[in-house]
Structures are given as structure tokens and as C-alpha cells.
Length: 316
Image (tube, rainbow, N blue to C red; front, top):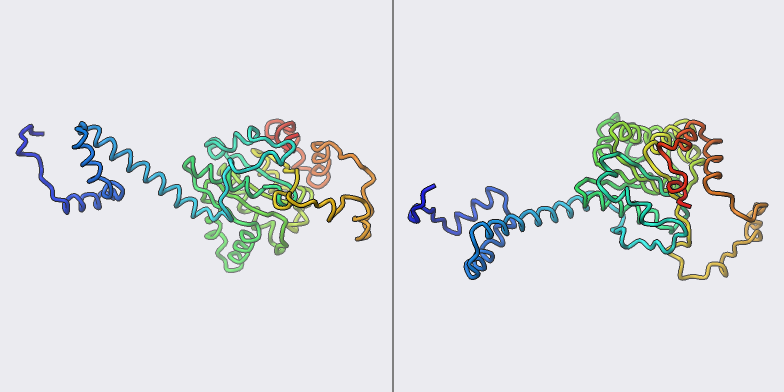
């Protein structure tokens, strides 16, 4: 490059605008004049001026990408992990979710089942983990189990199952919300298995939220064998976490006065209360429950390679 000052190209503002557009530097186009005036006033080196323009452009693109991926995720609401009230949980701590908040969650293809009654924060946690994946540079999609099953069921009837499957198998992270909340068609297990199996083979993580014990998934999905196969794949590299405590939606109410937790309430429907007043150990309950309903999944649950009983299942 010539050192002759007269050889320095002189570009008009209009010509600079065209170059910025050609290079798709939208943010730089909007700020360069202000930055240039500041650089002249403070006598910046050319290198510093260029470095600031590039840093601002990269930051703007990162923010734009974050916003775009968040919109595409179709979260039912926006929540972050910092907004979750761990004080409502007796055993769950943020440290137990650490492996799900970093990029390894996606690159290692881990999955997660969040189980609990209504209002315990299952969807909040699922959205927060999905959003953290977006912050780490990955694409997330969130869909209710009812919508996913209906979409794939209708596509199957039209002979377009494979094309529609891509909607749910392409994103790096898939959140399937509210398994068991609504009733599904008789092909529910079949279409859901297609999604789970494809993502399992590609080591793409899934997050499920459910209010149903694992032993009831076969009844919910209308197929015990396929439900067992689904759980077997999800839990091979996954965790099962129970959320307890009070409902975050109704914690301001004294529900003991409205809905007393006694056997008298159960007898209204003709159901006798439990003979066991003390809860049994969570892991033992889960092992017996799944072993009876899904023998193949029970083997997965017992495997120390995929499940850490003390920290993973009920985090007790």
C-alpha cells in the first residue's frame, strides 16, 4: 500500500453506505459516524477505531441472534434460571442442574425429565434451561406434548410424517411440555417414539415436563411397550428430577383450610386413604414402580453409568 496521503481513497457518505450494505454491516452503518467523531476528538489510533467498530458489530449480531432464536423457540413464557425460587424446593438445588446449564448439556446429548404436581416450576425450569442453551449458541424448540403429537399424527395421515419430523428433530434442544396433562390419540406413542429415537441416535437432548409418574406413561400414550422404549432412550443419558414443595401459583393461599390433606377428603370420591402415613424412600418407590411397569427401563434406571440415584432421580 502506498504511503502517499494523496493515494488514500476518498469516499463519500453515500459510497460508505453502499459498502456497509454490501457487507451487511447494519450496526456499523448506524454508529460509524458517531464513533469516527469520537475517535478524531480523542485522537484514537486507527487500530483502536477499527477494533471498537468490529466489537460493536459482533455484540449487535450476538444480541440479534439471541432474540431471533428466542422467538423461534416458541416458549410459552420467558423465564431464566435466576428467577426460579429454589427456596420452594426441599431438595433441588441449582448446583444439581449445573451440567444442564453449560454447553456440555447439548454437545453430550443429555436429557431430562422434570416431574411434579401442578405449579412446582417444571415448565419454568425447562424454559430456563432451553434459554441457557440459546445463550450458549444452540437452537431450542419448545412444544407441548399435545401439539407435537397432534402435528405428527396429522402429518402421518397425510403421508408427510418424515417432513414434519424435521421440525422436532433438527433443533439442538427440544422441550416437550406437559406430558400427560391432556388425552392423546391412539398413535401418540408411535409418533413420539419417532422423535425420541431420532434425537437419541443423534445425541440431541430432550427436556420433558410431566405430572404423571413414569409407570403411567404407557397408559397416557396408549402403548406400554413403546412408552418403555421411549423412557429407555431418554434416560440412557438423562436424569429424572422430582419437584416438590408448594405450588408457586397458590402459595399465598392457606389451602389447608380449603383442601385439608386428610383421609376424609379422599372418602368423598369413595377412595380410601393410604394405610401408610409416612412416605417411602423416593428412589425405592421409583425403582419398584418402573420395574413393574417397564422391566427394560428399570435396567436403565439401575445402571450407575446413566443414573446417579443420590443426586439425579429425586435429588434427595
